Length: 404
Image 1: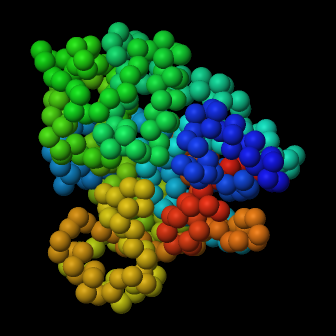
Image 2: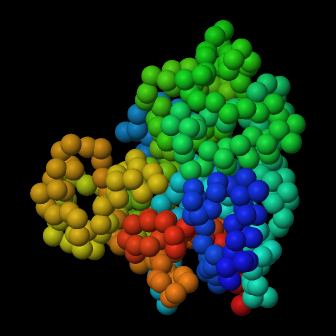
């Protein structure tokens, strides 16, 4: 993409609601292509993931040791859950699920990036073009309406509130995405606002924000089990059960906790979890070997440390991610003693692309799905092969399915 077209692309993204690019948010002026055969298998895999992780046997097992707030079974399903994959170079058919994020940042940004890039770049004819952003926004609104009607039996009266931590609303990279989400909901007829957990109140069995009753909460907080004192009102509303909240501690504990990859990658617990043989075949093929660090396995893992990356089980946005070169037996024992829990996951190489000047970057694939159906894909290009360094020439990556 030549400089003039790149600048118009970046300006169009900023005008559509993204932060200033590249100063405040990184987007690449090149794209990645996913073969249709690969994408179709990923779609099938996500349906299997949904079948497994909503089965009563799975829910009973994985919530047994979860915090009490996560044991209450809930009906809500987050409409912006995201699955992150690595596609090994030269062998994309050997793709691997790295993690599921029940609270996937960037879905509205990704929809704009994909659409506006294809409007400004000269893409090959065999790439599937995404719909215009208003069409995508209507689809998201329909998902929210679907969730409301399943939960309440109708579109309820009251406030839809997008909730995020104070620091994220003040300086987070995705705070403008929350504005887009509020605008989308308002356009669909909701009374919609953005707030922090501390602004909520609980009175007379009603969740309140500035005196107005809240009935539907889109939760963007990364305090996944709502342990801080500021969540007192949200915890009370959640326990009462009359307010829709997604994602929530139950969906996190049953879908997004990184320790769950151990259960998905290995067959030893299949009987207790209700995983069927045909499901196990797909899971073992596409979930890399993962272990929760324990006293009885830490020395064996330390001996094989070059095979793994290490990350906190309850981390997000690659915070706390450790490459094998930075750890040894002593550090793994310290991690085990001090907490929080860490997992060791077999290292899976990313796809390699080239930016301007033939500078190498390494890309992943993020797929968003709702109730088992994929509706958006995107990627991120990193300057580092093992971590997520999105500084230019890396950044959020326009991503398309290739028909041939």
